[in-house]
Amino acid sequence: MARMITQAELRNGSAGIMDALEAGEEFIITRNGRPVGELRPIAPRRDVPISEIKALMAPFRSIRSEQVRAEIDAVFREERLDD
Image (tube, helix red, strand yellow):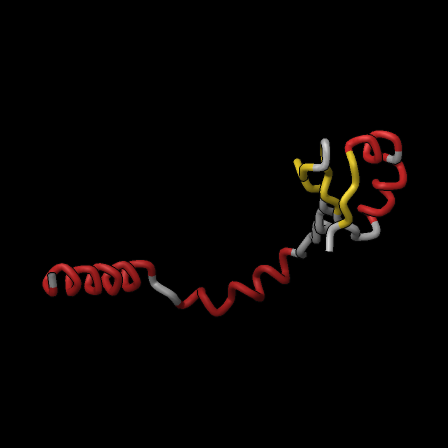
């Protein structure tokens, strides 16, 4: 659950808040007692090796786009006929 902090706490304690963000903590910022914004950590980016991407895509190599398009067109033709 997000921790509520005031605008002044954000301004005066920004270094500690940044450390808490890096540790995964979330914050709701308030102004005059009203929530006005959120601070959330950003998930770290994961670089995926090209070999892993190729392995994940391998099952799709046998898909023929013309065949898929024909199947999609057939479904939509059937829906138009049913209207």
